[in-house]
Image (cartoon, rainbow, N blue to C red; front, top):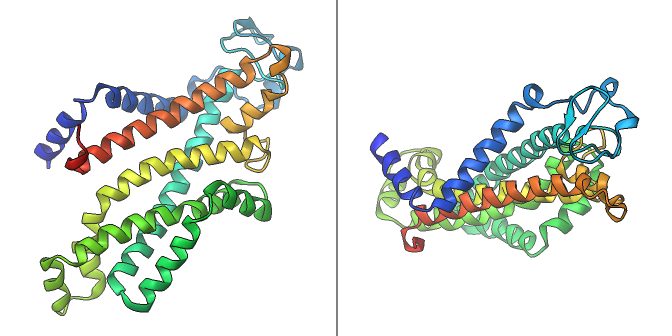
Length: 290
């Protein structure tokens, strides 16, 4: 196992862009996890907010005595602190939605490939029908129906994304199902679930991991879009999309930092995750290696 991981890392580090992207992802995740300890201010604590400090430029010394390195937003919150806490929420939503969508999609895709017949046709027709709709449109409709909040938003994101995992799992499982060792296992008295978990699922994980990495980034982008439109998380839980929306009305007044810095954080996070996903795709599929 250690030799395999060592070879995997040697291949990975040949692409310095992917190494930098992975380092950025680790730094962002660490900063988000440590936000309560490294953030200069708790943006959720109303007692620490001063309206006199609202919309101050980067480098302003606030009434609390510390420097607002990235300035403040319209509520007087330290923007660096708000971004760190916003990263926590965006990552929570993206990872939670991606994990649940992967579990549901993988289960449906492998079930369709393993069962065959009418069940296979029914599952895949539903999946193909959903893939014909834009994910953002489906998420918008579901959020409008379910309302704001973390749980409704996760349900909307999972519903919009599980079909990608189902299609990927179905393709990988269908290819494995036709191999001799799987046919031999299915001919034995082994229960079907043991055949799936022992022989089919392990070989479906590499493409699912790649799709999962990309879909986590897509879920973060979808959540930010919905929050920017006022349909995602409530203002009491400001994600990066909400922070961008809060400063959008001040862009024409020259207070660009309120939206620009959260936007930069969002772009860096999404691009870094996508670069890592592309590198994993290339490594899991040797035909794609450059």
